[in-house]
Image (cartoon, one colour):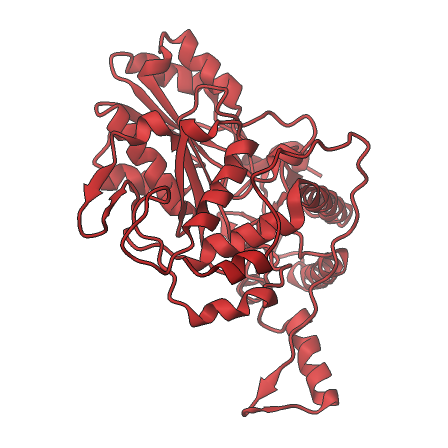
Length: 442
């Protein structure tokens, strides 16, 4: 392991009980991350030039991170000493390997934290820190296939591409299910497709926040549909892809719970998104009884392994552990409420400006009409699909940044549509006529 000094330096215990949040808890704003000093040509700039360059970094002429779901509000200066170590978590996080510089104690601490969040006992789960959200999906679908070798994979058409990549990699039969305009899985279509393949088990990907629209599939309705179609619990496996919103939803009032008390098989989240880890990583948790079908002894490691990757980033568990321990459940609740509040602000301002926009009830992803200027899209790093784009409001996205984005967007639109020859796109087919402000639906 890295050393007891580091463990003592980052004091705190993730092994305690989950805090009970007061119902009248009042969210407060998150402190804005300071701009790092700018160094050029190996030396420090003058104060005037530094302030000028720093302002350019904040506002950006070609670098904006408004749309991607990364929480950039972090400070890991206390962990800078870790760059001197080559930390590699080999094999099973719960079993000693023959490589001594590891962070498995932090990895297990992080896994225990998420196990409590998703309500599964320590002796009933298995998991590991992945290298990204995609790896979590690849692992969850793989476990499902190992448990149900002849199962058919069902995923909504708005599911992340990594799930369909898993189907190709594992040579699985895959059925795409229709979605509503909100992006949520259409359980009527799901039922029809289940009944058409009633003789084979079902492996289902449930989205806890779709990539483009931030839609949350109704887990309870998915389970109910499976049961109505005659699928007993031993004939289906559910993987929950919670890449972004899997960590946010537990802190949203009235949101349905993702919990292992329901008949689900696995859950995965990304660590570099809402948590704010500086390197791509994720968390994957499944049931212990399921992972045994995947686990193999590896003599070379002197351990067992059931992961997708062999070597795993040993720094990521420490960064995740540090953040979870520092913020706690209450800290995450504050950030979730701030994100949702700011997302509603963005949606309202877009609509007030006559711009088509939609925001799902349980989401901080604001969907709006695609800007016609590709340079504007590149400058703000907007993720687009067809006629729509989106902004994912994260803790580091402040009202000031949203105002800056909105002011520029509105100013640009006045030039794009000045001569009336070019009209704003109709996005009724994407987000519904009630959210479309094109000439036809105003």
